[in-house]
Image (cartoon, rainbow over all chains, first blue to last red; front, side, top):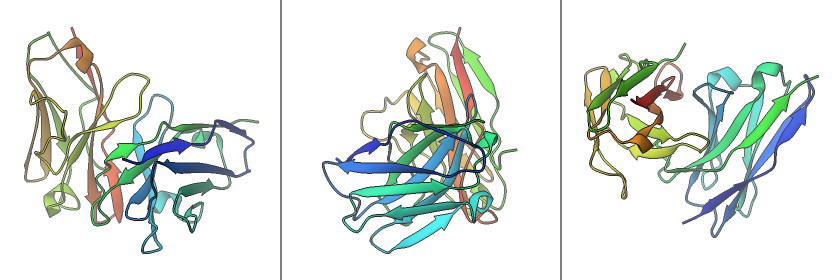
Amino acid sequence: QVQLVQSGAEVKKPGSSVKVSCEASGGTFTNLVINWVRQAPGQGLEWMGRIIPLLRITNYAQKFQGRVTITADKSTTAAYMELTSLRSEDTALYYCAISRASGSYLIDFWGQGTLVTVSS
Amino acid sequence: QSVLTQPPSVSGAPGQRVTISCTGSSSNIGAGYDVHWYQQLPGTAPSLLIYSNINRPSGVPDRFSGSKSGTSASLAITGLQADDEGDYFCQSYDITMSGSVFGAGTKVTVL
């Protein structure tokens, strides 16, 4: 089974952007769907969007439309989530998470998370 | 405010049964979309607990069960154990939001 390895913690200034990576260890994302879900400190889970690399399709949560971009490289061994115009409320743990079926939003397994702190 | 409503917390003594509700609407659960449940133990990433309303992934004890009716779903934990303490989240798809939605989560405490 593919293991997910996410990039390290980031500290960003308000108004800047962050790009978090998620690498597939032991396989590729070719037949999988990569979701990005965030969790603010002490809060619940919030789905941000997903990418289906095989079909080159992305879906974004309405809340993040225009501010988030999810991509995958051509080798489909890595996926990325870029969030722009950062504000303090974007401080959260960002997870990449895999769905095995493109027709479902079921998340089969999760990465370890990447902490993004937005502070002046 | 979450599209799916969960109680903030439930508690029970070891061995007891607890249930967690997940209430949605005709835009999500009531529209026939599946409900999935995730368990998040302290300091860890979430993990899949119940999928497609009633199914357990391999390795999940049968103490955990799910159900769905109308615009709601429920997760039951029987034979409550100390290491069940954590947060539990329901998830579904919402037509109005055009994407996946989560409940705010329920903290389970073993007394």
